[in-house]
Length: 275
Image (tube, rainbow, N blue to C red; front, side):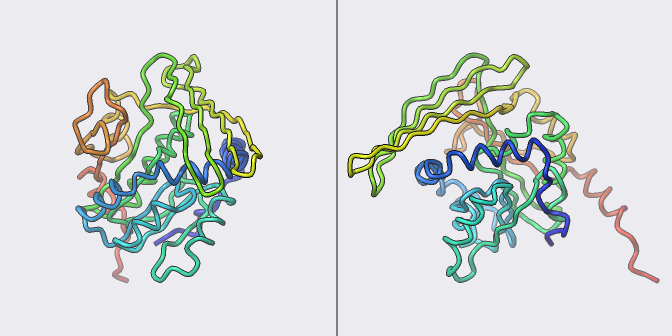
């Protein structure tokens, strides 16, 4: 079940994330259509056959909606504007997803989900190690004993990364996206900069530039970080085709389950129902 305490925590870090997505929302909505990687998430869900699914950082809800066709799905995010659009898009969908405003650093559910997913690494916004650890612990708590957590982790090598310019054609024109990542000094911290130019068919143009601070994952420390949160890593993939992770991989995808010790501890912690 979702916990009543899943509300948004109004601190500076949350407000920074909300402000960033608010500033780029019209462009992000167009961009997200081409970057959802729906086939991977849907096929993963089908292979695991979950009874309930939880998405962390649901955003505009495209992946949550696709997963809801496999099993009842809940999407959690801190961006109220994106959640409003996700709800509007799925308002008339039978057996559609549920969208909840929540801070994923805090417990969202207790043992109610067979599959918890984090596409696009919303955890990267948690730049403080204690916040990242809190998110992983909350995700572990949400899993059933046989459940799985799948995280698409931010992976960057230790130098500036200039991504290829992307162009997204849409009904109103063509959106051009420039993306670059710069080391922020401390290990695994990055400044991400995005520039958007939307050239409209009528001759107009919309532009925006935004940046944020993110923390990437160190591949050699992934198992240790997950283990501290009560999670045992089963697989580490280097792309959506599930190839094994290597240093030159395009991305880092982690599949984990609750560690046996955490399951036993959770069982001992449950109060007796006998009176």
